[in-house]
Image (cartoon, rainbow, N blue to C red):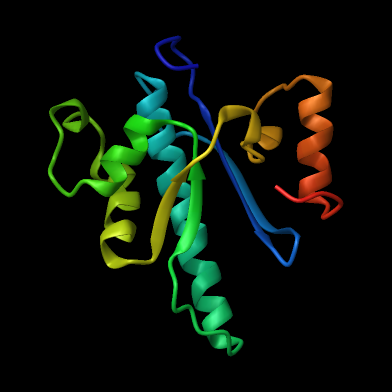
Length: 146
């Protein structure tokens, strides 16, 4: 939990043709001092997997003409990802964790805001109310749409 002395868990899931095709869950390398920082770290981790998947799809004959959509539920993190100007609040964030911003600048990723209850990847990283977990599980398995 941010500011709680523990490493946050980052997670991401990629949905294609209605079901999860790839996912990642990983303890963050450093302790995030805010939810904003934890979300930037998670976005950068998901961005690494997105780069791999985009390359794989290209090799399989599916050109990647549009950016991959990355859904996030923290507006400050979305603002940082989309603003090439270094924010004062992000000076302490490690360069490797700002990879997400580079992917946005390259046109490989676009960030979209979603409400926290609609974050499907949360099913991989934290305990949820049963109804929300079941909804996200259905999305991961292709039984419902996100």
